[in-house]
Length: 143
Length: 143
DNA sequence: GTCGGTGCAAACCTTTTGCAATCTA
DNA sequence: TAGATTGCAAAAGGTTTGCACCGAC
Image 1 (tube, protein in one colour):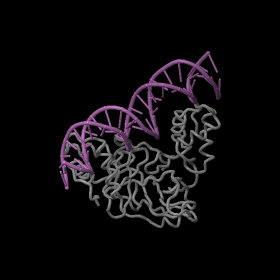
Image 2: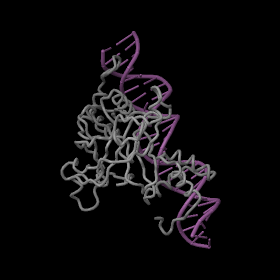
Image 3: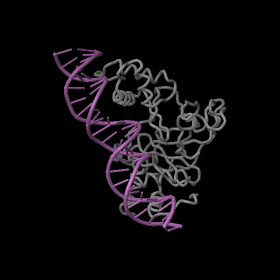
Image 4: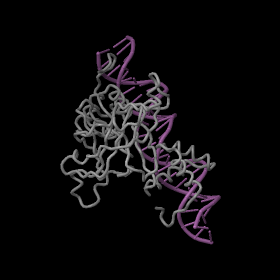
């Protein structure tokens, strides 16, 4: 819901497009790289400003991965969670949710949301011998 | 399991103590502040170096909260997850886990760990009118 | 023509690293 | 004493902000 004073610019379009086209949550760095192929000279600051704008507007959502900058995906999809491949570092959507989180809350706590993050190896990396790619996957969280 | 060449210093002791004494996951900033009350002149770099050391050794664990630096807690506790109060920003442990995450994995994916983060208002903040404290709680994730 | 948006550069914050001095074992 | 550890300062990301120019409406 763009406020009445907000304008549609090539930059904003390109940024939203980059996120939509990616199909998986991606970091600002990547968004900038992608969007810049459509809008030459696009500044990184503009990417950050736009990301905040879109996030506040509820158009996109931030996905946090331990030890990495936030990844962004389009909001408004069905309820889902994420899988982080320790080998290649990519983040995938996963269907399903076991729910029932309210019952685990301590007495008096109000729960209004939750996030589930799975760790492991994606189908691609699971085939490979031992080491995956060099991309990422610094292990900051216990298995 | 300290490697045979690792030494016990006041600094490391103070840092581990600070985390243990806190009772809830806290960020490096806070660890530094706490530990410095025992070891005057403790450098922030030492805190970071020690945190990495302890994390690699499996003594402590990092807990990621959207939009905030990682919080650290002692490892080796029973299986549990976390609750992030949007009002005061504190992070609490919560018991229980619905498990069954493997069945939600896409075909061919190997799951070797998971993290669950609940959002809402803690018991203290739930009592308050509308606005909690000023501490934190930037909302970067969808409810 | 207005006023919001953009690019650039500088500022900020958190985290890491280089190095000489210090302390543990 | 040897070598690990520390503190300080500088460097290295990632993110935000100030400002003059540009462009959508």
